[in-house]
Image 1 (cartoon, rainbow, N blue to C red):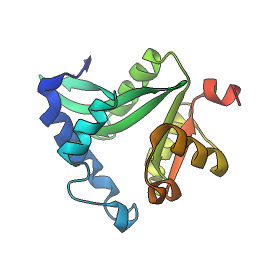
Image 2 (cartoon, helix red, strand yellow; image 1 turned 180 degrees about the vertical axis):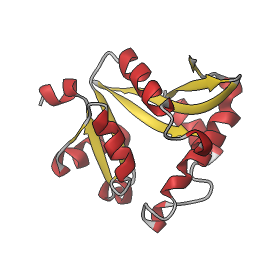
Image 3 (tube, one colour; image 1 turned 135 degrees about the vertical axis):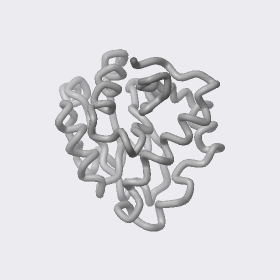
Image 4 (tube, rainbow, N blue to C red; image 1 turned 60 degrees about the horizontal axis):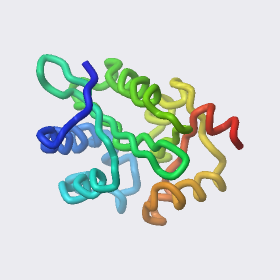
Length: 165
């Protein structure tokens, strides 16, 4: 079952993000990795910036989470993580389909350039990597991430965004 997460899910969201992000250790640049991958204050900041989390629940427990955030004229998919023991079982695909179905504006996704499995996942679900110039512009305009993260990331766009270019 996919459901919107609430305040009571905060600790579980935080735990899933940090568990699921373990696949990035040793893959993304060392200076971009920290433990925990996302701190509680950073998660609180994301929630304050209107990132709305949705979760995949099975057996009464959340197994995966994915956020969506309306920013200006687009919807960003943020923080897509599945518990390490449940990865590669279709949970991420179901969450992505649900969230993109809710989006009323073009959808953009940012991820680490070295995370080839994440890029393939999004491409499999109809997203296209944007050009390097577009990526830099989009990351600065919609995400506001540090320059180092801009250097080491990619942005993928849905077909609605691609048609508008």
